[in-house]
Length: 405
Image (tube, rainbow, N blue to C red):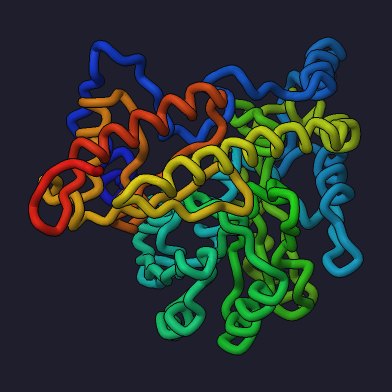
């Protein structure tokens, strides 16, 4: 397994020459961790719940490998819908959403099979699958259509060895949010081809005003779905490693093999942090809506700032997000001929301007870079000004002249 394990982001970033300009403070727009700059903090009730969990000394021992019953019921109650009901038996805890995805991929696919994953998309899907001898097939997302799935392309990749389709909504790295109609179209393809879905919904409800989030499971009674979620992003506590799977299976397709398989896999790690499990019911029921609204307001304001600023720069084409914490920005590489690809472009931007954005090669989507939108507003504004200066210095017009007028 170790020999087959490689993280594309780490491989690409480790191969880049990242030497910041010593005269400019480094601004990293690359890290998908909302806590890095200290400007986005958990709600007070969340912190208090964990403190209480520590003080009551009831959660210091081993929990069941799938998680405490009370905490699992809290997740079931919080996410259950009339169209997608849940009980505690449908919830399995994991050490963060990444481990939840690992469980889902491991239980649904066998060595020699394949799963479908988005392009651009979170690189961990490939890392987890390839380590198990499972191949990945990348279906395209369409930047000119709000990063919707190219449904025809996705369906063309399905074959008798396809074990699951991974759907990430809202999206990392795109910040897209699928419409209800588009989700139903995805589900029609899954239903037609009898393929289950792994729904990566760690950014559930992290959507901007004017957009609405629909879970995959809420839109079907027929397609079996394993949804991965957690506290990580929406509650601003990625280091607490509290993730889960919710199982949506109206017709018991998962009854004989998948459910027992998940239970077996959880015994390898014995579940996530018990103190956080002890606080989970309070976190899910008592965190005020104002907290979520405030977080989204900050990220949306940053998205507006970045989109407006980067849209004015010749050679760049940002795609306005609808949610999550990211924006993808296209690079017209023909206008920057001294750089071979987006990786060289991003490396040079660090060297000259001390601004680091992940090249989208990390997401199997060259000629773009990803901007993280959780930084303090003043740093984002400075970063955009530096990106403009960098592009002005390297932009080449069609006659071969350098610089932007």
